[in-house]
Length: 213
Image (tube, rainbow, N blue to C red):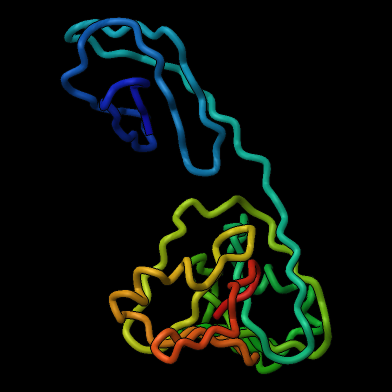
């Protein structure tokens, strides 16, 4: 994205780097260049002239990747991450703990290494997962923070990821949905915690980072 700082002028470039922004008043401007998974770059005091194409050289620095360690216990549990893995291949993500993994599934597919079944293929950032482990293990997700934190929930049951690095109060997260009667119930995967606003029940309290519900 290209933004003329302090104005409402902005535009987007394709791979060839061409960005068309119309209506700019000639003058000197600071220009902010940003791209997903790259550090922002500020170009200061760039002159823009009338009816002239401006050529700018912008070399962006990739963001340093982060790692989210997620503790997985024996048996079933929910799984999600606030980082978008650098390598989204589902088999590569789980390869370090493959000896302890039984099955991974979401609403669309399954990865069952013991039966050589994989219909998941790639990690989906806005999907939560159900995981069954044969033994405790720690799954490390390496990547960059997911910028789009809004999830669309379909009618009926779904698996909700927690796309943030901290635990979220369930009442705050679903405040609008509860008031509009859109939300029926939220519950732990393989747990007893539940948030059921119609019945004024909340034994869940928080959605924990690294889990899914």
